[in-house]
Structure formats: C-alpha cells, structure tokens
Image (cartoon, rainbow, N blue to C red; front, top):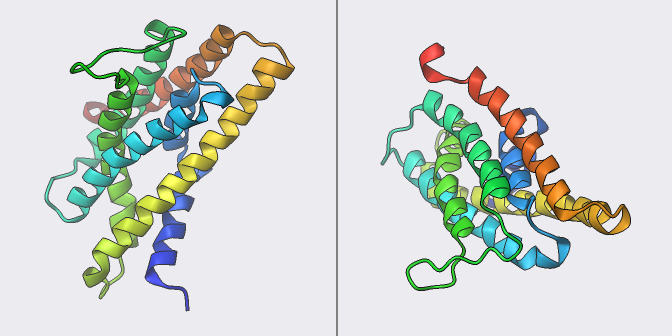
Length: 203
C-alpha cells in the first residue's frame, strides 16, 4: 500500500506538471527566459525561492490561518506571469546584479519569493480538495510531501526549458535577446488572456 508521503509527493508533482492547468508551468517558463543552461544553479535558486513562498502560504491556507479568495488568487496568478515577463524584457541586463540591503541578492529572487506566496494560495485549493477524512493528523507530512513533489515538478520543467534554450542559442544561433523576447512575449500574451478571463469583478 502506497504511503501517505508518496501519495502526496505524486500529487504535488502531477499538479505542477498538469498541462490542463498550465498557469504555474507558464510562470516557471517565464522565470527561465533570461537564463542559459550554464546558469542552471541560479535558476535552481530561483525555483527554491518560489517554493519557499508557495510553501508558506500553502501551509497557512491549508491550516485556515489565512483566508483565500479563490477568484482573486486565480486572477493574480497570470498577473505574476505578466509581471515576470515584463521584468525580463524591461529590466534584465546581461549582468543583472542589484545590491539589496547591502547584499548581492538578486532582485528576481525576491520577486520569485513574493510571487510564490500568491501561487501557494492557488495550490491550496487543489491541496485541500485532496485531503481525505481521517488524515488530519498527518497534515504536516502531506504538506511536506506535496511541496517536495511540486519542487521536483518545477525542476523538471526548468530542465526542459534550459535544454530548449541551449538548442536555440547554441545550435540554431538564436540571439539571447531574441529568445528572451520570444519566450517572455509568448508568456505575457497567454497570461493576459488568462487574466482577462479571470477578472473577479466581471464574473
């Protein structure tokens, strides 16, 4: 019999990799647009920052510590994608190092952390729908396994995007700026359609 940990690990991975709800995938793709394969460690840190953000709000929402307005969360998720795409195009430089609080922490790490808070509330709706009666005592295990599953799914998506960027940049000689514009522009356009479809006050 499959353990609770492995069950929720699989659920987390399947949720982030679900093409039917591709908004989270699109965010990860946009997050990767400005990076090359050799910068995979920096991308892994970005994804970890995103995971820390969504793990926090997922736990708080699952424990009913914070209220979740599903309509607004579903609207704000594509907004985070649009903001990330705009950041890529308008702010990104070849060496994008910003000193924040006298450290060398990059601004986009903080951006990923902040946007992870919003996506975590989106994950919470799915997570709570998967909770089974009588499993309340294993909530911590479920949360941990689900978040690890989401992280593994995100890293799989990152691997695919960076591999594709390697092919485009080194095999097909696409310029970095052009690739960034294509990926970010595509992500922005798809996210805009999603945001317009999810405007809370128009429902």
